[in-house]
Structures are given as C-alpha cells and as structure tokens.
Image 1: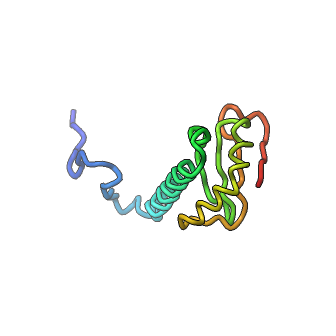
Image 2: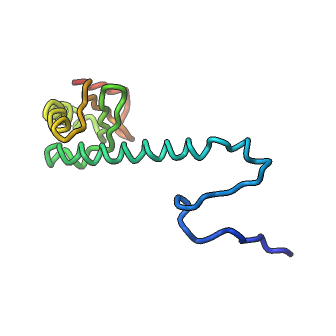
Length: 127
C-alpha cells in the first residue's frame, strides 16, 4: 500500500507555516486566511486587555476575572460569579481611570458580566 506523501510537510508550528492548496480548492477557501488572522488578532487583543484589567484591579479581585473585551465604546469584564461581579463593578471607576492613564481609555461604561457555570440567569451590572 502506498504511504501518503510527506513532501512539503515539515514539523514547524502551524501558525508559522504557509499552507498551499491546489487550484480547484482555491475559490472555496479564498479569504479564509485573512479571517483567521483577524480572529487571532482579536483574541490576542482580548487576552492583552484581560491581563491589563487584572493588573489594575485590587489583588483579591484578580483571580475572578475571566476576560475582558471591548464592545463599541464600552468594556465588558467577565467574572466567574455574581458575588465578584458587584465588587468588580464598584472598582469600575478606578479601573476606567487607570486604563486611561495607561493609554487604554474606555469612553463608555465598564460593564461586568458573569460567565461560566455559575451563571443561572442574565446578570447585567452596568456602571
């Protein structure tokens, strides 16, 4: 039985490898790479923002922040339970001030949402 050809394949990381495809498949996947790159960039921005938010919150709140994303002018901070939601919301004005000082201004509201298994209903804590 013939072994699959490994020509052109290498053991390099997928992210650093340019994939080539045959001409018949090109129209099907055109623009996919740009979409994946845009998604990867947005994910990296979210991770960076979440790290910055954690650094600027008081120490007891930091482990409870799951993530942070920008939604239009607002910033949404995701926490692991409703108990921590209120505390992060009350830290919102200071957080907003510190982010502006660090060059990451939030022109809208700092919104806090509960994410994960603890969430039983919609929690909407806006500041």
